[in-house]
Image (cartoon, rainbow over all chains, first blue to last red; front, side, top):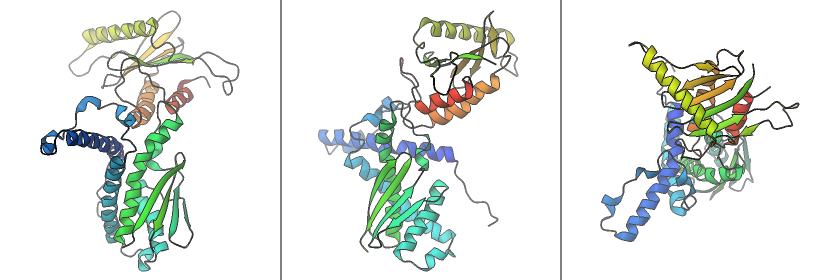
Length: 202
Length: 151
């Protein structure tokens, strides 16, 4: 391809992704508060105060691992995933993997094409029990590259976890675009190594 | 080249990182010097005060319409203090021996390759430090040590 491919500055993208978890926590918190006050006047009250910008206090919120936050992030990823696979298929319609759409090939598509598009590298390992369960392993998850808590490693891992839900949503979205329903559990096995446990219904 | 200590002051004029190196026989096994131990002491405030005043006088006297004058370093009989200020108001300072003439590139390197990369781009670390809080990230400490510490 000789035409110019539109590109995104990696740092800007990183900074944007970094803000996703704090944003999800803030909106959840605001929604909760205003919900308790009055549902009718909900809309005008949703605004994000700037009291904690430039700070990381927000990540100490008890909402960090709450269902609402997880759900929001996972949904963001899901809708990225479902669009992303269309874009990738369009860009590379000659892809060998896409000629035979069995489940293992779709997983390979995620490991190779989707991951390369998102993180500039492939997944490092793909395991399956041939009964619909897959484990995808990335030995050095790119989003976690610069994560380092001032407290300790345990704290780093604790606060990293929500970011994984974005990626796991993306995987669910890509699978869904091929008509596969799935249940995905991400895990930080040995920071910055991550694994995605994928349970499909096929 | 010997570097005695390294200091960072944020734009609220607080010392957010201080590192002193002492000479040890085996740097691989022994820990050298102190981290953030001197940040709250008067020395940090005095050092900042001197740098702040010198920078101001440098600007007042040496500015031309085309270019702002900057403070690069000043020397005493025992050490030389190297100074770098980012446009955002972050101030970095190294105290070295008198033989070391210029550390501007090194200071800029620490700012752009270590501070920006591992503090600013690190979502788990604050970028606006509250009074009294310090940089305690292990990775940051390790990288600064590797770059500036005794070999």
